[in-house]
Length: 194
Length: 441
Image (tube, rainbow over all chains, first blue to last red; front, side, top):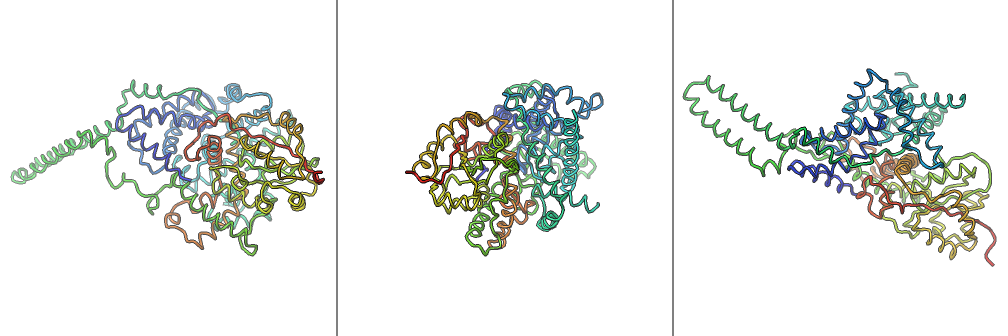
């Protein structure tokens, strides 16, 4: 399995962008916009907000592109920028609306997007539950879970994105899993009572 | 940190394949004797599955134009121009500083040094305003900015591509060892018996008939997921699960990677002995005897492109298997719904893949460690922070499963496909084949 092709393609597009070819950067945007959107949406839990973050991320990435050293995957580097943008926005918003409240407010929108034919009702319920539980977590716990469980990054990459030592990644991930487990159990019990 | 908390942290990292060999041994010794830890691991795996089954969110539009317009309207300079400007600024200010210092020096020294400074200034500016120089090498060639080879002991990261390359290399070694292990019963790296490699979502306790022999020739993780749902819905018990390597069964597949082969080989061992799909009466008897005496049907999961071939082979070779088209048709109509794989399914598939391979992980690790001892570990691997990477340590990650499946779908090698939307053709078909012990007249 040779994955060097992908990397070379990114590097080529980066070089072309640095040479002043903006359309090459457009290619990078198209290539990663959906993946980045999916990853950050699970942290932000708000579609429009996530789209804004994505756009800001790409603009920032463009201006900082010359600092990309190629020591990591381009997406990891991009995600780190996006994560920082998202966290600063979320922290600003937290003053007026809690994340959980925000999620609840926009829950219908999120679920609406997930809706599909009737045979997927179970899946929708599952998605709603997990989204609710995720929404209750702190930004730190939610982010690390998304990076590990959804983005499937290893500890090294998570450490790089969150700027944390590996040991902290390990302990925080454990706490996040436990917290999520508790929330899911609570939701499950509430559903049974309801 | 309490002992209990320490165990839980180890367990969490164990689930991620991020432990050292010593830590792994420690937690594995605790698992059999601690029900609480086993339950915790199962809970975490279940919630991991739930997270990975979240629908794939995507932007329904191309934002590249908006981004480029924003860059344009905000007058964000192209990166290399910013770099050039900064370099020029640094050069000029450096020269200015030098000139200031020079003013403090005696006149003879000034005359002597001024010449040097002017030369430096001209050279610096000349270099910086050369378009070719700016374009070709925008990054300054300083020690801190140079790329280091990833096998360097100073390298701080091993990126995904490099991981995959190493994973492949080690996976191949592990696979060789695994095959040897399978062929040598005295080996210390005995293959796991098929029953000990369950798929969590297929582990149902419902005791009802018919018992089904589940055969997956698709090597498509999503197929397994769908089968699990269907069987659960219909309260059908899985008698056992068998995967057949499409390559071995004569089905073309360019994207079954070493991890998949490695994990699947243990489950396929029995099938190899019975020559894959050439299910004759002795083979059926053997399968029944080895796996589940009560098998009443065989459930085949195949890719759409494989179905005709499967049917032909079964009709020609499986003399004791009666194939009822009406049953298959009804079964498919009721249950399969010929689903098109969308992003949602891809997400599920990826997650399932991660868990599935995780189940087979331990034998991978064992095989890999023996391989490393015997074959020798390349320096780059030894010094990388990923001692237990990929094919050996972690099994196949969900993301890789997604790429592989998409590669299958598109008929391309997985490394070329990335996370693109799979085409509609990627549809799996389930065949329900009744098993009878009566030979054909």
